[in-house]
Length: 401
Image (cartoon, rainbow, N blue to C red; front, side, top):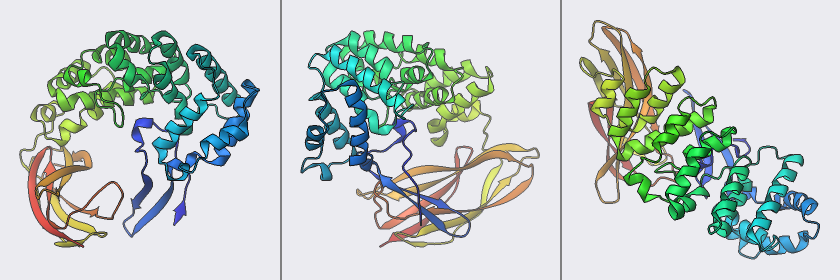
């Protein structure tokens, strides 16, 4: 077993809080397990000591011993990541000025000091700075907006802007639009990521789900952004919109098509949910025709799968066209749910050019290893093969304890 450190400097919305991060990497021989640390353990005594050293340089009256006493309560060990983050915000507040603008001014100085002290780009452990702003500054729009713009260049404020979107509506939408033209890519990313209609793990903004109109001008401004992280956020935003308003995304796809390879990539990634659902118009847009395609000789190699083991199946991709065609090759696992119904999840295998009049063998494995984020129910499950959005073969297998 190999041990690696947690990865903190990735997009925050890609992280599932309070979950033991165990990733499984499969080779053709056997699975290798890479154990990652618990996210909550980023809040360690060593971290708070280093934080305190930086705080004291800007706040000479800071009492590290008292701070540690308030942090390490009897309940601290049982707190999960988000609870520890909130707890850190509240304790820090006890040591900052009561006046919010004064507190924000000190937070800015502390962040600047942290950069000097070896944290140039922040990290997930510092998300309590973002949490501080809506928690204590929701009534002070001007000061908070200025602070968000500063803090998000150290640690992303994509979650912090959500309460302001709900409280201030159009006023905050206009601010997000202004941020989409900011010189900092971190601020530009915030303008897209923070206003996503379905931002994972964030407070919902129902108005944006119902009508994403305020989002669209922001995406227009960012569609050719030089930063890959910004463009990825634009694609994720489009994918959110597609779940409620597929026609809007289809219109954008036609409008942006061919502007640049990067913009075409945004369209493709932003259409991934529609592609997985086999949306006929988006399949046509990408030239993915399922006619004359077959999944021949489909066979479930493991008709009985024990929980903790893996499903094995194989088939042949048959392209009966005389010319090469692009095939988006996927499979769906139809999981048995607690209510006795089946619900599918689609997994992409590849999307590439298959020669004309060709037969290509494919064999796949699907793990049913127990993880904290998935519950498996014993009983009949199904697996299907999807070629360019169309189901071409389906079989069943039994999952047992």
